[in-house]
Amino acid sequence: MSNKNQPTALDLPMVDPLPDATQKYFDICVEKLGMVPNVLKANAFDIDKLNAFTGMYNDLMLAPSGLSKLEREMIAVVVSSINSCFYCLVAHGAAVRTLSGNPILGEQLVMNYRVADLDARQRAMLDFAAKMTSASATIVEDDRQGLRDVGFSDRDIWDIANVTGFYNMSNRVASATDMRPNDEYHSQNR
Image 1 (cartoon, rainbow, N blue to C red):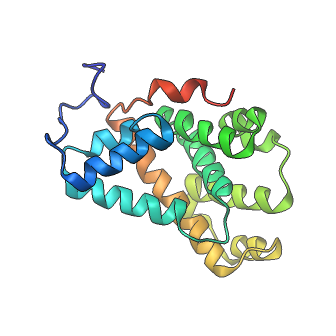
Image 2 (cartoon, rainbow, N blue to C red):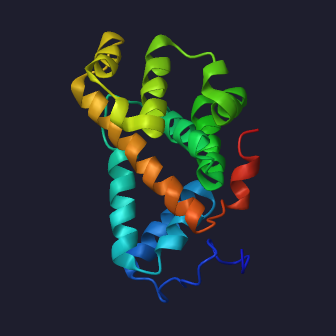
Image 3 (cartoon, rainbow, N blue to C red):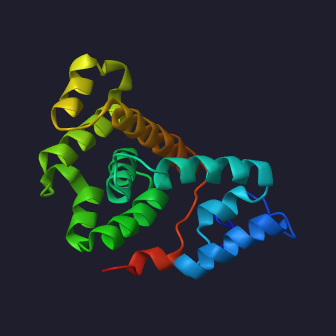
């Protein structure tokens, strides 16, 4: 990484000054998280790209769903583990620790979700996300039916697939640009 103050290895400075709406969003991040996540700073060289990213993230991760916020974060960690995405493992591992209140779960998901004490529903969800990440073209109706059998609706399956797809895309961008997690994530909820 060329400049410790940049969120990535690319020289793409944030728009300065930020538009009022973006500055307000960043201020909310500082208020709620104590920082502006580097993924937001990395996208802030182009406000339209930042808005597209945050719009998709907010819809997938925060909008009403049959998946809990924790379950969506669990998917992010498992996908990121398979893809060896340093940024997302650190950031979303911290979110799992926060939401679950269980630092062991966060570490298990980072290293190997199969060793975690998960219920059948969570196991099936993460197995599906792992298969989609590693070999999406091999998913068949039996895989979707396996999710239905543990209580997921077809809408839930849509959400699982979309959260998984979003993190596969985000992992690749983060890895390709050497995006670094904020230092604050490393010590959260340990």
